[in-house]
Amino acid sequence: RMQSAVLATAVMTSTADRVVIAGAGLHGSALAYYLTRRGVKPIVVEQHSVAAAASGKGGGFLARDWGSGPTTQLHKVSYALHEELARELGIKSYRKIPVLSVEPGRRGKRTQDICPWLDGEIANSKYMDRDGGAQVAPLELCTKLMDAAVASGAELRIGTVTGVVKSKGAVSAVLVGSEELPCSHFVVTMGPWAALAQDWFELPVPMTGIKSTSIVFRDEQREVEPFALFCGEDDRFGTHLEVYPRTSGEVYLCGIGGSEYVDGERLRAGELPPGSVHADPARVKAATQSFNAMSKRLGGEPAVVQACMRPCPPDALPYMGRVPSLNNAYMSAGHNCWGILWAPVSGKAMSELIIDGQASCVDLKPFNPGRFAPRKEGGRGRKRGEESVGEQW
Picture 1: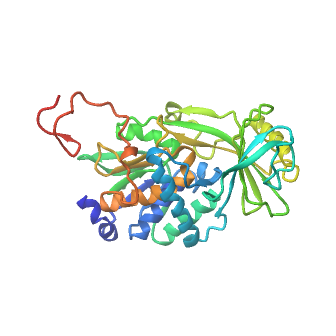
Picture 2: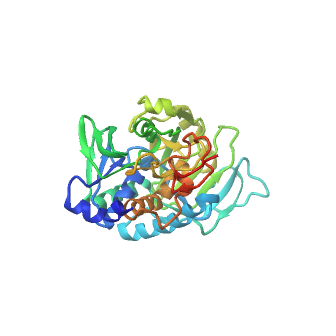
Picture 3: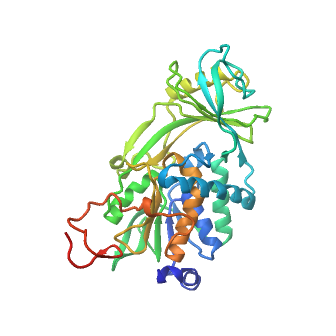
């Protein structure tokens, strides 16, 4: 912890003491932002561009009270941080939004109309969450986080991290192409592509990339009443739509069905790199038909057709913390469908861990990046931290 505690001073005085972050999505951008707020000026290395993947193409739904177990703290703390960031960075797309549950199907006597633009065929609608929902356009948030970090001294480099150089139980440099970039701390914030860290850290990093299509409609009136929709299964089209109208007049749809599961082996082999994940035309057609049936006013043809991958570890919990085998390597990745919501708290907690030696805003223990490493035999005796001391059985 002593090394971390003096980091803010060290980074200012020596180019050899610096934090290198791999990935300029929301988690890398949030970490860079919170580091610079405390005087640390990281280098962020990004293969494609800021918010090139899910951080630029996700829905941006935020829910305060939808966590369970260890994720409850992530939901509540990060929900509040989103509101803070909206004020600090002038995030125009942020707003509170009520959430409805919608049952697709034909109208009947029991159909309850709450949302005015659901003027087509729905069987029913009801409130799911009246005051614990919010939204943000992730592209705007990610861009403004990175812009603020760079304005405060962070550096953004376009390049591909290909490995690390290790010395005396630490990462001494990050390989960017053929260049060795010296570092004092190295953080992997690469979403599904954090699976590559398995080879760098010699540590199991099981990861599945869930590739899903999304579409965006635009309302020419630019006045779409704020209701987030979670729709039941529409057997006619094989969809389970989530619908998020934005302050810009856009209406974002996901839950389109037909997701592809990309395993860690394929991710490490270089399949589907950032910027090369494309939509499934059949699912675009199905989602368009499903939404057109529900909303005559907003339906039509989508203005944007896209796809991205969300990163999912086997237990659906993110990797956040220090890599056990290395004293200066960290991960913040694998945040599944809550990556946008959890980005602020992840960035803040990881900045605390790097600078102070431990996170204070949330407890990171459940998200240990080493939790899938094979357990050694024994280990039930005394311990000094993580080190076994004395007789073990």
